[in-house]
Length: 162
Length: 202
Image (cartoon, rainbow over all chains, first blue to last red; front, top):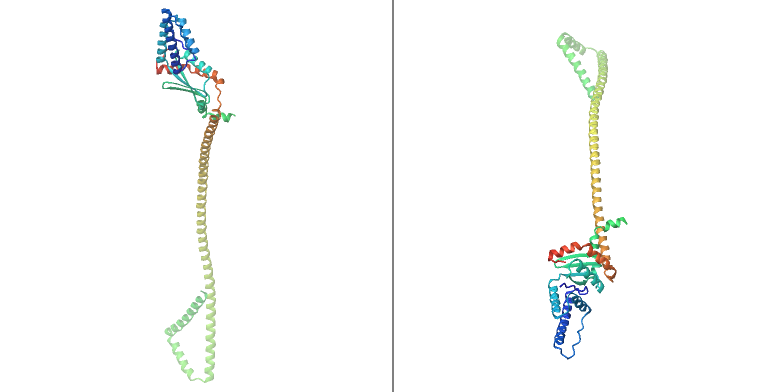
């Protein structure tokens, strides 16, 4: 079964939180299932509060296979596997990124680079704009700062044409 | 010099006269005896006769001397004029020769000086041209260096200004499309880099 994380879950911490929530839900679901099977009259414990992302994940997972203890366990295994194999990128922007920007960038990375990509976001106002992307030992500097510094050699030529 | 010549001719005249008299006495002794006899007779003459004879001899002697003197003077004058003419001629020739030599030396020196001057002028012109060209070349190089330094400083100043000014209040909202366009533009390079680091499949 194919695990597709919501684009709101971008970082390793988000994934861990999500995993914890799914684990909590799976635990509650399992206990509830046992009680239903044994026809225990005691009132079922209320469903634990989980985040919309966790709800969305569980809902998408249930579309692939009927929700059961087994399927939730498989989901947890998939999440663990995801955490171990996901390529982790770091994107540095000029200012703290909003949720929508994060979602857009994460969505692009999962669509074009790797479906299980995790993206950490940082900010550094000195880059002025654009982004700096780092993966393992590779660094891609597509910032305004680098472009301005690279253009400093041609600045006198431009000035003469003015 | 004239006085010396005059004196020489006078002495010569006296010597000639004396020589003539002695020669006469030597070759005509009778005359000498006659003179001696006359001298003896003269001693026995009356005082008036003696005085008269003495006066006549004196006059005669004076006439002879005057004549000789006149002749000497005339000869001396001739000799003097001839010598003077010869001296002037010789002097003129010597002076003319010396002047010719002097003029030749002067002309030679003049030519040498002109030659040296023209060579110096030519060297000066050449050196001046070379110096001017070298100076222009150095000025041009220095100008280029200064322009390059100004360009570098100006670029650094502008870059520093931009970096300092634009790093505050950055708005990412307007950059969303730009950010995705950057990723699209460098997609292949990005994917290759990730594959190089670890074999990740999409």
